Image 1 (tube, rainbow, N blue to C red):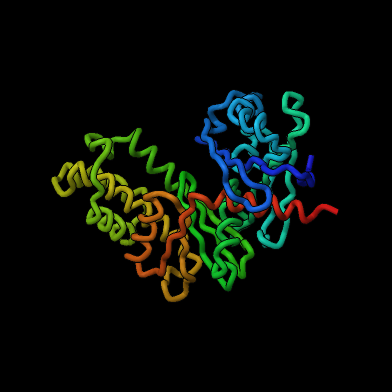
Image 2: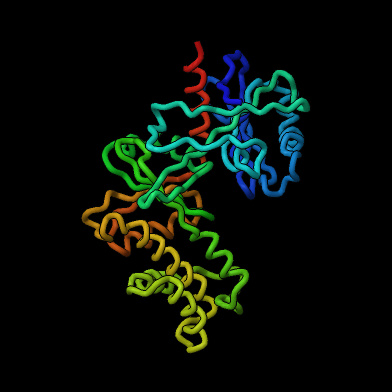
Length: 324
């Protein structure tokens, strides 16, 4: 059931980013958006089917009993087909600041009667060749970024959101025209854990910047990524790459090819490409900026650690404004 936010006088509401591997909840001042408290829990993939409501209540119950919030607003994989309820996808192009995303309400008889829970939908687009693509959770980070960064709302912009499934988002005057997903983060994790490429490398190694740069450089030399990856192994056997430096080289290969694929619509030319804004809250964002600058692109990083909460508060306020 598509819903909005009920206009209430409650002092606080609960905001949450419930992804595949983790849950972050915030107790938020309804008026100012200030975070009063935060909690962390299990990702939606680790919650047994049909138990999302119980997991939410177990974590949030102390807040609900003490502060009596009447609203909870959640984003992320909680709204997917493996989540609590499927909140669907909204088609692009979409002006994320000007258009209100239709929230989907959760009905669960086990929840407190006065607590209304709404889930943010994801985005979908059709890329060249009528290829479908989807995102869920990143749209809320984007809303937060657009709300606090006026420059992102002006002219053409390219936004990179690194992660398990990296998103490359094309903006025009703040409107999401289309986006592209790459499997870069998941590919690295799979190869690092389940292949011979990094066998013998230390679990926690000092980052080798020279080997990362070498991987980025090698990724641009014409070969397909499938034909480059095994060099992580063969270079170690030949004594050209140490086990300690191999993770950085592999990372450079994957990130470099990821960036090359994202730049194809621009002819891989730095001169024709808008500035790249990398939204991340981890070392990964720094690596993408490092690789982009090495390849001649203008890159800047935007700390993404609080953008989901910022985006959720913007959505919350927009939903209140839509009420009669």
